[in-house]
Amino acid sequence: MTSLVHRLRTLPLRSRLAMLVATTVAVAVAAAAVACWLLTRAQLEAELDNSLRSVSAPQNLVQETLARCATGEAPPETVNAPFAYIQIVGSDGSRCVDASSQPVKVQSSDIAVARGTESSTLHSSTTDDGAPVRVRTARVRIGPGGGQFAVSVSRPLSEIDTSLNRLALLLLAVAGAGVVGAGAAGLWVARTGLRPVDGLTRAVEHVARTEDLGLRIPAEGEDEIARLSRSFNSMTAALASSRDRQAQLIADAGHELRTPLTSLRTNVELLARSDETGRAIPPEDRRALMASVKAQMTELASLIGDLQELSRPDAPDPGPLQVVALHTIVESALERARLRGPDLTIEVTLRPWYVRAEPAALERALVNVLDNAVKFSPPGAAIEVALSAYGELTVRDHGPGIPAEELPHVFERFWRSPSARALPGSGLGLSIVARTVQQTGGVIALRPAAGGGTVAAIRIPGAATPPPSGGAGASRA
Image 1 (cartoon, rainbow, N blue to C red):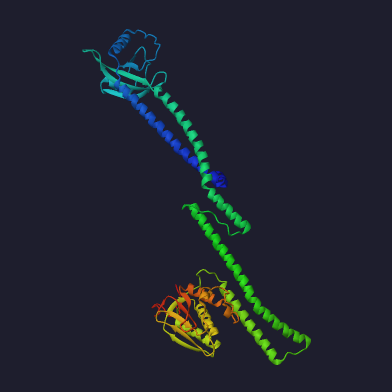
Image 2: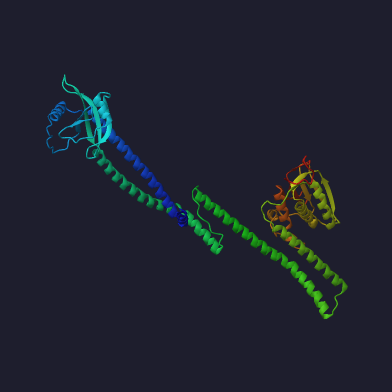
């Protein structure tokens, strides 16, 4: 049995489906054939019993049979088989058989009718030769003043057996043809039904062989195969998009790294050539070179940190979120921003607001927003930072502003406006801010400020008071 199951599992799916359909149809046809045969037999037997109840032995035939049995005369030879076998049954079990009939074995119920304890009986029996018959025994009165006798009228069951045998052969032939047809139909249905699966299999094999993620499978209808095809198309589209973003990230990172590395290499080569040739670089030029080297190293470190941040999955899985005080994180970010713009005035208005976020990532995002404001603010200008009672954080600078046609691109990776390309930075800051805010369920937008400058507005869901179960540092369960 185990080996059979193993062999079935090794067969192709369409072969197993064809075998399943053929087996199911065979069982159904066999059950229907058996039920039909049984019902036909029951109907024929009922009709035979009804015919026995409606047929009675002629009185003259019974009288002739009695007279012949009384004289011991031998029955004459008969040529044609009678419609029914007739015999007279005595109370002691003796019998007197009609000359044209076959003798039938007497049963106890026949004797009971002969003794008068029963009026009639209907049962099955056999002739002396073993042929099955159906027998009805009843009491019959002979003549107006004659006595009563038990007369058995029998009909051979071969009448219905012949019809049943022919019916069985017919049903067997029909069942065989049905099973063969079901097998062929099952194979056709399996091939037709699995044709989309074959197409999907070829597509998967093609993608695995060529890594061509642009392949799409036609999906028609709303059945399971169509849903599977659409899911496959969505998967390959997502993979292609992810691969394109990865390739774009690598290309952009290489482009951004090339500039500081080239500058750093040039400065280091100048310092090395000075040491090799013995020609000293003037102190002021040497200090400028060292300052440039330090600046390029700082820019490289910042760029590498941004790339590490962006290498994290885009899925909303920022790690364990905590209930944190947004106003406290803003104050911490402001301390770092003041160090980068000591000549700027930062006006701060903060209201309490508690959110669920990853503290380190949220602080880094806010530092990036404030860095942009510091970077684009002219010397001596003011930066306005406000956290309203409704949880909206705004950072307004008085810089040159962002043209309306550039606003849709400010959150793209490595995108920098033409006016900002001369300033330090990698173009990744706002992209990191957007992702961090989205992971906390918030939104960020940049818009032109009235009178010049830009307003960065951040809205993160939260509350003005901390949860009663914990303070600002309570971890999410």
